[in-house]
Length: 490
Image (cartoon, rainbow, N blue to C red; front, side):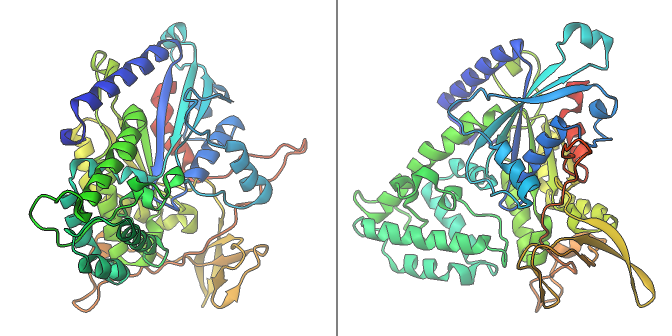
């Protein structure tokens, strides 16, 4: 984290919080796992499946503690942070398993404590350890994380960066109404609440249009504009960047001064507390991304995802701490970047999905690696909604995936009812991920992938003879668990 975005007072508060947490860890070993990702990446589904598989003995062959039979049980307990909303695991599990619908996406921060009881693989560790780990899962929107770089910017820098991005080829048509209105307003005119509300509305509409499936753009700060929560309508969220700012200080009572003040309030009231109370307290982090949605939207969306992830990953505090420094400073020593919805592709393309994801996070990986922290990339499906099969076409075997498309999904002109299964050929990803970062020619700015994006219903979970539901199927959730938790359960 660049030192300029935290003051000495911020660091003192972070040190106090860390010291308090460490004191509690002496009695109860705890690991705080952050789960984030940009919208539609599947954060809620990931957490629900992780908890369900650990609590119900899911098939986890590559999770060593489970495979070796050292896991005794996993149970939910009340979380330690009473001021943070609880992640409603039971409701989400019921939607996935009982109703076979995908749960609502993350709209705010939430937390869940899962206590894992295990037997250590080492006799020495069994002597000193109680074989009990509290896993505190912190779920928060990736859009909020994208706000952290704002702490190192003043209003003029924010306005310049936002305006430059809005005028890019991928966004100019979407940003037109806001840019036209904002450019016509004199920033030195007297402050007007009507102007502030109108500019904030137009800017929010522009961000919302960028986020839509057709564009699937990812760099969308301020994040709370799209997820305002209880701050909706507050002055801290009623501002917007202003193009063509004069290189002078803002006159008192001007629109420019109003926007500056509200931008600073947004940072102090919204962004700083989020960083100090949540991000700075994490031990490990998983970042989920929907790379296929970006690929489907085209080259500009892939490049924008790369930009957003670079911003996200540089906001963490990666590194390793020694015994003394860990008392007052928490570092994230492992970061997992997971490309979700791998079940939408045949397994032959999974390595290509991972290669593309590595290329997307290449720049940020160098920053994390230089800090001493580990970073890993994985293609997974927290809940597997399809199975693989083979179909004949023109005398050749064609690898397909089989699932139940969501009601209203349209494939080759056919609209599905949400009940009937079908097989589709998902297409092949290119062997070289760099092809997504280069225009096809001087007249083409996008490169749509040759893949079929189909939304499927969650799978039907079978029951045992005694009426017990089996665990949620997945792809590589066990590898994710081994990377994130394996050493803490050794």
